[in-house]
Image (cartoon, rainbow over the protein chains, first blue to last red):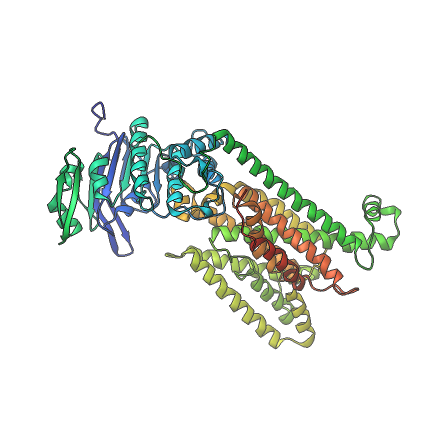
Length: 271
Length: 362
């Protein structure tokens, strides 16, 4: 972030409470602001409410949340308008359907056109093809364009899902475990791409991560959830302390610094 | 690190240029169009065959002459062509297309390859409605005699889809719940039809058994016209929803996050499907197989882009039923076997030859 952002810049969610039946999944969580041009991580153990918070911010689950993007209230918008600005990428990989990858991306664009979401409604197909090809090139998978989704590996489908999301060119991306099926090389490569895209287009990118070392070194801001409540928020090095890791993740861990200044979490055992 | 290196086993010779990908995609689109054209041509041939075979077979020249100049041919020939053969042949095409489209949309919105008007109880409900008219003489007031059975069948078939819709909107209902409920409907209505058969007089029993076999011989021009009009009304909405349905195939949550109003798309499709399949089934009886397999054939041949998959399913359904109609006439000379019997026998080899042959898209 080059200039001081206005206090309203970015994505903020206040007083998010989500109940499934009688079970309270999120209780009065206030998160953000997640700033444009940054990559933010949502951390927490399994079942802490990370996915639910993302869905609530995207408007996909009923909640009492007040969600604003750059000062504009998202909560009152129609789902189609909202998803055009703030796109949630589900944790489940795109289904293995008998559809060429290129067409899977075109469909993601054309669906939005049909819903009259994008300003370029009824955009010609050529635009959809162009942005699909750009997005596939961005993720280094243009060679998959004509392969069917049901011929791809899980990791390849995850990359296609990411390309699908970015080809829609939203302002905000909420990525639910976008690295879960990727090998080590691709995990770092995707983080690199996200950081570059975020800076270049001033995107708000929030992602659920399990790898604390990636969170420490490749994100600008982390928010930690535990049992449906927000327990910490801030720069990763300040938030991820041994005390927090013991309380939230129930492990004895140290945060060490390598010779090059990079931090890493070293786990000694479970607490 | 600036970009991902190309990965995947199929890339020994480097990444294709974007121009190459565009060309390949255009070629794929062209190939799909030609497959649709071939299916359409095959339907025309099958309809011609339908006329030229059998006891009163006509050559194509005679047929065209009769169609264009009906007043110059003998009355018997005119009646055979205009009142019997032509409505049967067109009904086979219309019913096949209606069931094919219904099956395709059902399989997409329910995310289940076994969904079809037959497997979800629409056909069984229609049979129950028919049995009410045939056995108990219960029917809707104000309908002319020739429409009593079809009217009952239609009302029951629509009712069964309405029940599916209600179940789909219950809290915590998943698509699998709807499918299971549909299967429960099949067994329920089959049991009720059996009960009717048990109670029926000998004549009524014969009528009912014959009805459930599925036959095109009940066709009349008004029925063909009504089904075609319903198709003309419904199909544009199906094609308009093509992109949303394609996106829905990649996962319900993904579709929702991409801005698809999933409940509305699902409800619209169910409404279209119920109108088309209920009407088709109420006119011809139980012809179950087409709605199940036509979508699979289209998926194999064309992929799951619904711009091609939906018309492909319609054409595949129409072709199967048209060929079945020809076969029904041919198997035993002088006897028209109920089409429902023949459909499975004709369709299964066709189906297996396409589905068992695993292949990619290009």
